[in-house]
Amino acid sequence: MSGELEAESVGRSVMCAADAEMALKIKFTTHDTGWSGDIPLKECPKENVPWLVKVPSEGDLPYNSVWCRVVRARSDGRILAAIWPLYVLYSHVPHDTDVSNIFTFLYMNIC
Image (cartoon, rainbow, N blue to C red; front, side, top):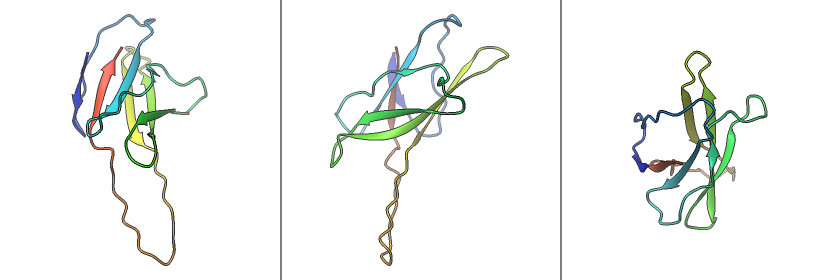
């Protein structure tokens, strides 16, 4: 199943067994470049570290990197996946710099 997930909106819910191997894929709706690789819907084995995900993109770089933290609730097993951009800022002092967020629309695909 897939579909567009607007910024600051609630995503879809999927019922599955607690031991099911599920994955999430994301893409930019503004680019026709394809999906990211699989993001396992389980916590990263390294403690307190989010997954680093490469999302295909257009422009100077073939991809943009985003962070994805997956957390499973201990009480009822629900899974929360939070996605945010990997910010890279360059300083060219004394020039002013405009910074904009290009990570507005993502498609979500649960495998």
